[in-house]
Length: 169
Image (cartoon, rainbow, N blue to C red; front, side, top):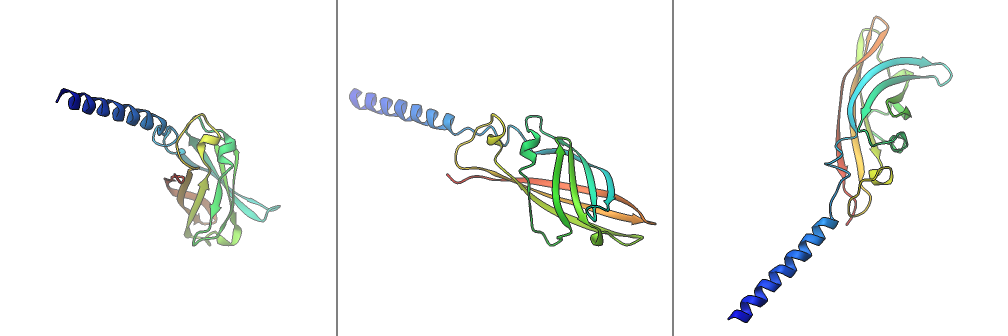
């Protein structure tokens, strides 16, 4: 009877040790610990570039501190129902520019809503965070409204959400 109890106790100890080691190797410091990519997005400017024949919507952005501008530049735009946004650029870590087709902007005394879906690469390639499995992807959906009030353009109703697509095990 004591031998069985000893074997049972030994088994529980070995299993618990294995589980503890396994779980410590599976920690993820790239997602919940770091938080969302963008803490804040505020409209800064909407200017026309005759050289590009596009409008440039400039946004002041606040991102989590440990993300460098090189990470932001991994952003790729995914097609949406509104293809008016031609491209995205991050001149620096606090600035995001969206290039909008001039024909997509609203006519005088109207407004248009724009949808942007972008995807960013795995953070662990740009920071010291770790996680198990294959590369994660970060999907950011952004919506904003451009108002044309007597040919004066402004942007409001900015909203965004972020989700993580975990890499394969």
